Length: 147
Image 1 (tube, rainbow, N blue to C red):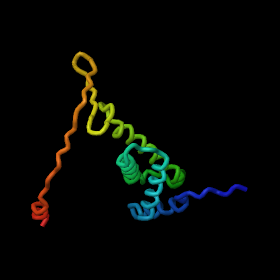
Image 2 (cartoon, rainbow, N blue to C red; image 1 turned 180 degrees about the horizontal axis):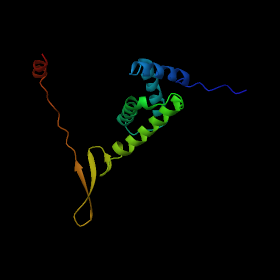
Image 3 (cartoon, rainbow, N blue to C red; image 1 turned 120 degrees about the vertical axis):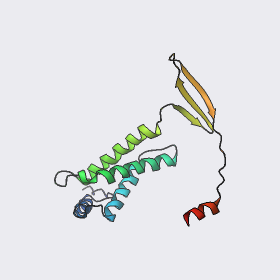
Image 4 (cartoon, rainbow, N blue to C red; image 1 turned 60 degrees about the vertical axis):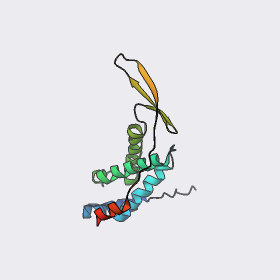
């Protein structure tokens, strides 16, 4: 007899927390923690060139959950499957729109290769050097503004 799989988020507990959330008209802390575990577990399936890209995708997925959690139908749907598919769609949508930006062919160090199309329809490629200037900030001025 095969052992049942252990999931990091229990479907029954998630449904109970969502029922509590509907009564309060806001997500409970336990439901948010379950969603965070789901998002974190989903990011382990994908690879990212930069850590910031992974964090951006996680943020996009949590934003989708927090704005659309009330659309979940308690009678028909299974919460884990519903929100897992929402997370997957948020990852792919964010990756296509934000990470694969249009106009950039590649970034290597400080050189950025940019493609543009001129008025005649010819493709122009140029390499632009990005200069990094250190920012100097006076801490005392910022503290005076806060105080």
